[in-house]
Amino acid sequence: MQCQPVNHGPMTIHTTPFKKPSNIPLQVSFDRKELGVILALYGKMVAAGEWRDYGISCLTDLAVFSVFKRTAENPLYRIEKRPKLRNRQGMYSVVGIDGQILKRGHELGAVLKVLERKLIRIVE
Image (cartoon, rainbow, N blue to C red; front, side, top):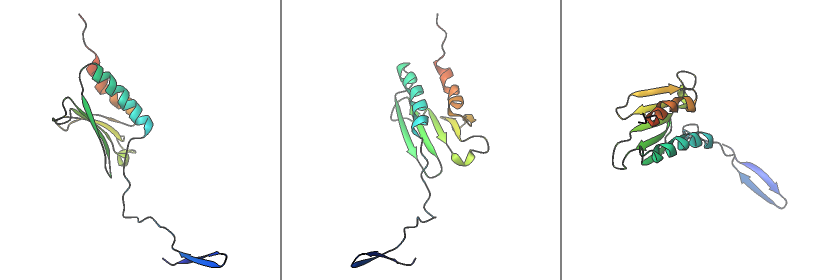
């Protein structure tokens, strides 16, 4: 990169234009609307006594919202966002404790319905 002189009256300042390195990957995360949908379901499940804790991981290729029954355990479910799969199966998925994908799709609300079924119980 070359320095470009910037003239500020009697003083000249040499600056280098900032260029973001292309080898630094961006971080994937959930936006506010997505977190609102996820946390609404989380609140219902906490009220029902099914879930107790959660964790959020923002990585270079995916974002993960992990749900726990107890803090020291493995997550019961993982809600994942993978933007690279946007044009294929859909970027949202729900993964069970054993790593099996329970539901995958393009819309977060539709994917989370697989977890809302856990709230439906027979009332006697």
